[in-house]
Image (cartoon, rainbow, N blue to C red; front, side, top):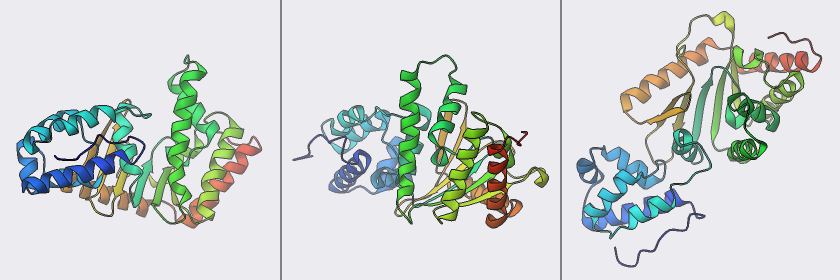
Length: 280
């Protein structure tokens, strides 16, 4: 790989690695599928690596160096860029989220991270780590709030959230914290930055009873689905699975209140919290 240099982690590292991977693959005269075959991954997975929507893991980096004769370039840079401010099970999803053109998310029990306020996020992390010092909690809160900066762009990504009524009714951090958190969600909706719907308890059984769901779309890569459990998370790119999860989200949208009615409920619940009238 003549002339290639180690990458600067401050300069969109996944995009840079992806560009170098595409260059090295084409130099070898291999298609994405041909490179993926010895790695036991699909051609679309290689495409996602090249587009920067997926992180290159060390197990693949070493094999790619061998296949493409890149003299340890990908393994070396993969090690350098492996550190993340996010938990291991969520790091790849957070990186994909940052370059998504559309995000559709069903939140079952809490307000999604992208929509959380500082106080709400701190209360969530405190619940997970009740004895942790501030020095451990503060960076987690900061990292979560930094993710929300992707909403600073007035148009991209499209964020469509379906919030279960339980996420509104469960008092996280106290009434004042909940009032602020719900007003923040409502403000984003009123500014036309997000679309939000509420799935009421009255909807009964629904398509995502098993847990939360996140779907992500990209400009130049196939869509992904992200599913998670406590300290576990997985990005899925199997077309049949992503299609099934997309249908699940469509069913949730159909069962939820309209965006207008949902906004009215969110603001009403926020007002109840503010006045101490909310009883989760």
